[in-house]
Length: 299
Ligand code: TXA
Ligand code: MG
Image (cartoon, rainbow, N blue to C red; front, side, top):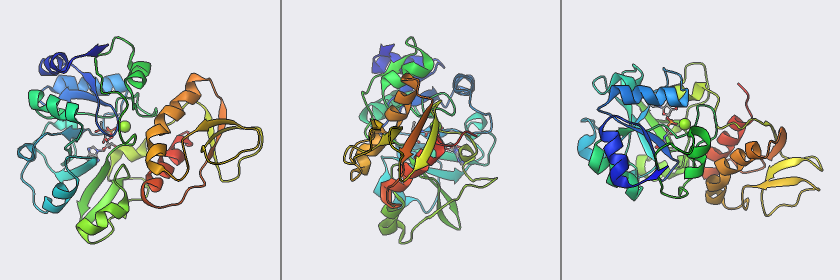
């Protein structure tokens, strides 16, 4: 159910939950002031209780005092950067009990206008836990039904989530996202390390299955003939049924198409598909490859 900015703000200001566009993906929003609304988000998404939420703010005043952030904030806010900072005062439900909290200042004009009316909003991606994220209002409806309140911003710009940084002696990328590792070099004067998957990741969300359609997905650099294939519009494949991510030399377009394409496999009841992962491990491609590999993982 598409609703106006004012109606969505009213809902959030009385402790309800609604879907909201951002420049990365759609979010499932609740006001930071309503612990029961935050709880509702976990229930709606079927999200594990130990997976914390990002707090979305519209101005620097909403950020608790912290040092060392000026250069990053100047370069990347508003935008698809999330910063994990020491914090034990903000809503425990949003932090999932951790001694840190994640903050992001979104760039989307509708999100910013909304936060002006509501104050800080917690927002995980607006998808059922484990499924591909939502990049259009239609995706939100697929997961939460046509009666779910949505602020319609059309398709999003980036199509992959924010990059999450955490400080541990140096800044580290704990979730890859719309800002590439290389983009931090001129700002930090070093390349922030990308945390590799492990048993106790700094980003709890990395523990869980993500971005996966129902189909079994097989990563490959040389697809067999006559298969169902997630591939690229500028490559030729031998009599395959193609789900195109766009041109292989345009990572921004691939990112925009990524979740729509994965969701389309479910819409078409595909049981098995190959994914062409022959892409370079640089820039935004690295984020795309990480998402594609995750989509292939069943656990
Ligand atoms: O682009 C985005 O970041 C989108 C839009 C809606 O803003 N949001 C998003 O939220 O991707 P979500 O909940 O799907 O992913 C947030 C990730 C989770 O993996 C979670 O574990 C991590 O952020 N996170 C949140 N708070 C954290 C904290 N205090 N420490 C470490 N990781 C944290
Ligand atoms: Mg998510």
